[in-house]
Length: 162
Image (cartoon, rainbow, N blue to C red; front, side, top):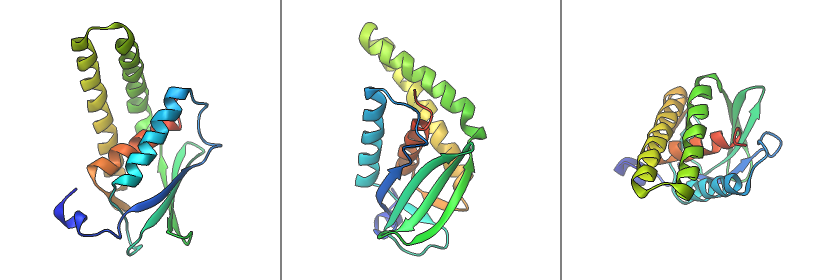
């Protein structure tokens, strides 16, 4: 987070909800990942929707007809608008990210530490790439920092995790 963002506490998400109907069925590990991403996101984030003024904000995420919907509200529920984002640009990176995650979880059980570290580095790199795509696609609609983008990318992936 930049110093400028540190000094703007009104630009943050204080509540986040995922549309349960949009989520893929989850294993215990996947549900755990979702909860961690939400917890981490609420602990520290920078979120500044264009033209919304100061927050804090609530964010409701859903997946409707292959589009990710960011339903942004002011804390307390006042609707500020929705941003619809096509999932098409994310398909390949999410698929590749899942393959790396599977390899990582398998490696944790069976591989040497050096192999685990190599797979984890590739997984983190893919995660960074996904969060960069997210920031680029939303740059004129919602501004957020790298950590917020990473956590939001995790939540976006959770709509496809099985």
